[in-house]
Length: 398
Image (cartoon, rainbow, N blue to C red):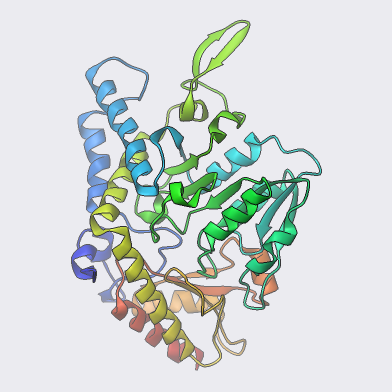
């Protein structure tokens, strides 16, 4: 199925803007994706028609807000192939991973298996509590997955890996990773920040123990996110934040926690963010994740092919492996730096990209890159966007 990108773009008000007198080309979707009109409408409707706190009132607005909020667990569960009782609402991937890292009550000497390609949010929470065992990398930065098994030992408590790298774009072989980790008796956490909006996810088939993702990277409001905890792990994690909403009863001598995900959701939640998440996932469901994934493969191939024609430019990651539509470019040392190029193509050509180290400093160091220029596409992009990006770069690096 070929996506009607022009019609899809019309659903996103931001993309109607012009920049530098040209149609805006948004190739910074790995940082945050634009919001569709239906997402904005879901927020407006909540504020205009039934603003209320959830799980804390009996009046009609509270009942409507609570029902709408809880219904989103079912929407999320359908999107990723899980049970609604396994869905915890959080502020984003970072909070989700910290929740697990703290809730596992790791001790000195415990080990966590990671890769050098992890976002800081999937390395620093573990590094603060345990010893990291990193899978070796190839020269292009991609993990040597054939060396994964050698990293497991008697003190390994968890294996934490990305679904898709936010720098390399590479898609991890999760089924093989999960099977190997489980064979060693080790649970697996998957950082799905760059996966959930691009790839069809079936956690029942994948059988990972934790899957975390942020709403804003798939078109939902900032501050919305999800932790899916499977295989009974919600009952084994210790809560690390406390407050109203997570308890069934409180007495002077005892506290009884609520069952399931609610024990990890203290305080007033981001109701409008969660409702917006449902709207964003609804759009993805209508388009179809198989179609989104196929469109992403086409864009990824075009990005790789186009960037290979740029003299002196190095593309990080394994070009032969499956990837989401994302490339990080090491620019020639003789030319402009990545940040200057990013500003220039925005100001002159109306193209938004990212420049820097993308919260993956160690990976950049291993690849010998002070910074990279990153272009990341999504369902709102087409081949013309890729062509404009490559054409804008060419005179700047000649």
